[in-house]
Length: 241
Image 1 (spheres, rainbow, N blue to C red):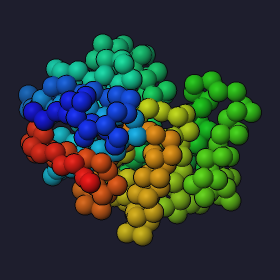
Image 2 (cartoon, rainbow, N blue to C red; image 1 turned 180 degrees about the horizontal axis):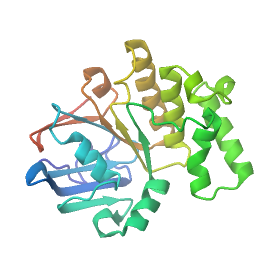
Image 3 (tube, rainbow, N blue to C red; image 1 turned 60 degrees about the horizontal axis):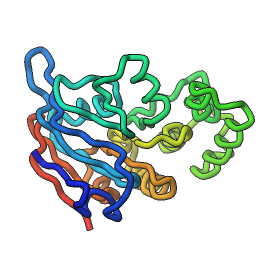
Image 4 (cartoon, helix red, strand yellow; image 1 turned 30 degrees about the vertical axis):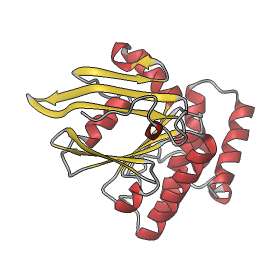
């Protein structure tokens, strides 16, 4: 088991950032098969962590547990002071709406909503007033260089544009944690580089923690640390200079 202690300067970019996520001894089995075992790490505000490993190593299972989509069989996940394993389904839904933003490989935009409406949707779920929603969405779409595409539907957008919409949607409610599952896996190399740069810059600007699941060496380079999994277990941790 690999952990980072609160006094360890590797625990955050500066060594003293606010603790956002604490994972302790998390394990998960499916159909009698152990797919995640005894995973432990900490993540501070503004820190970017890459999860790597071969297919079937437990990366997506761990990501689902971090986002409250799945529950571990044992261990603890504390996000912004709340132990997820102790929350009800309704409470987990609240955490996902308020504390977590997610970026998927295949974008998962709502096809009947425009780019503007897709980004606005998380704010509607948490009851942000219309005027505030409009101001925040317009500002973030400008930041990701999509103002001119605000009224376009997903089918009218390129892959890179859809992923920029997805990143804006993940950040619009100002979450503590961004979970990104192979965000460049469905993009060409040029768009992939642009998306990685955007994730780097936006998490720097907002001081948001990021967990990035990836097979890409290039993607790990935007992260402060890389944890490698194999057969469900953490086998190594690399701290990037």
